[in-house]
Length: 336
Image (cartoon, rainbow, N blue to C red):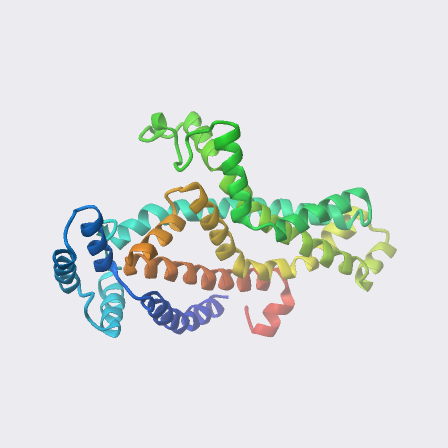
């Protein structure tokens, strides 16, 4: 298993390098950079003339290397990461990019993992419940919920919830994790409850899509598995219905869902990102949008690389879980 893990990690390195090149090139493709943002700010808010603002923008562009070729900028950025662990300097946030990532990424990952846990447990459970009660009203109800979860856009659900909270329920604390009295307070039960009150819409929306997918796949796979010959043999041997389902059918029906774990973390991250943008939470989503809007290239490129890395890590974890779940995979892959 260790050899398998090392091989997968080694094969992921060239993929990350290619992704870094493509990501940096795409981000730099649109015209304009942060110096142009400074020029517009000086003209619109500082009252400077175009010539004065442009002169200041050119000075800023030269001092920060924004006038260098894209290839040079890329190698300076990637070289800093590999040699010093330096992801660059955020011109918009006026701090190192590592600090921006360190502030926002843990919150985003925590929300994404909570959503993933809820989506997996509830989706698999509801899928088993629907498959064992095929064509009943429970199956129809859960199938309808699954259809809605996979078709309704998450940003639309977020907008609807924001409208209800702000305009119907007069909730004013939107865009933060805590109420003002809990901002710098030590952890306590009251602070945890306050956190849940602020983030439950993001968790609910991101969970809903993953839950719908898990439930739909689990139901379909379990229905196919229940008609397999080895399941019929287990029933013929006198095993109870619950034992047949949980010990023989469910483990084999889980295989596609285990493989799905390779993309579920990026999926949950994007779900959190979409809803966090609507709710203006200080997580990865608003940082990506804000940095792209002003041309803060190093923040955007670093966050996109982090999302790419989560996809690779997710696929490695999925392969490991599948190998642990199914002995046939270990035998075919030569894993001990």
